[in-house]
Length: 153
Length: 153
Image 1 (tube, chains in turn yellow, cyan):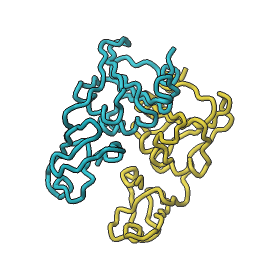
Image 2 (cartoon, each protein chain N blue to C red):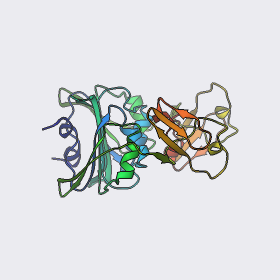
Image 3 (cartoon, one colour):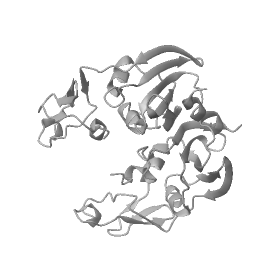
Image 4 (cartoon, rainbow over the protein chains, first blue to last red):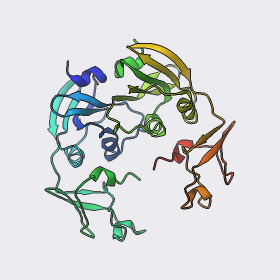
């Protein structure tokens, strides 16, 4: 039995996100726009001992299969995330989060004079660099603490 | 085996919050100032089928025993919350969230001209009424959607 099975049990249908950095689960939920108000089952285990990562988080989302695009956004804060799509209690598909070329509507630009921070209906867009992300409007670069800039309003 | 044991397993030492309204777990964590950065185990099961509540959330916080005062704050959003203090895998203490007389630093006042929203170092204080809460400064009353006013900055 693996570590996370000790903390949260199997789901029947849905998506299992594993190997998330310890303590990142709430940011992962925010990026996926999941807060429990959907009414479907969500289980989270934070800071589970992991051989590979020291500690890790696991998130299980029932009755929802995440797309590759949804998963790829997670690579910004969880580069080693693994994703299993589960149907009838069995893993039917395995995905890996891959760095997307850009992300839209996920991050808020830290530059207060950026147009995305004005009262304009402009969706944020960041180009993903090797070592950070760059605002597609004002070119401000975020290198560290990307999770602190999640646009979860 | 009860519902929540199907979703998240037993903890060795810590606090189990049960009978939280379905979908409220993330607000409960915010009220307790828990976001996973503590490094200790936290597990959450949202929207678990419950006979008593329809659906419920369960939160297990490892290596931390919540005090009565911490628990009482939760009564604002989870009036039927039950709290078990667990030591060495056994429930050693049972508490019930009770409505406190007032809460400090938990809610943000929705009145933008309230002094607690000025750039002053004033901690919010709300008096708890039968059917809501009242700002201790400007007397603004929040009756519904208290969770929307959590001060989680």
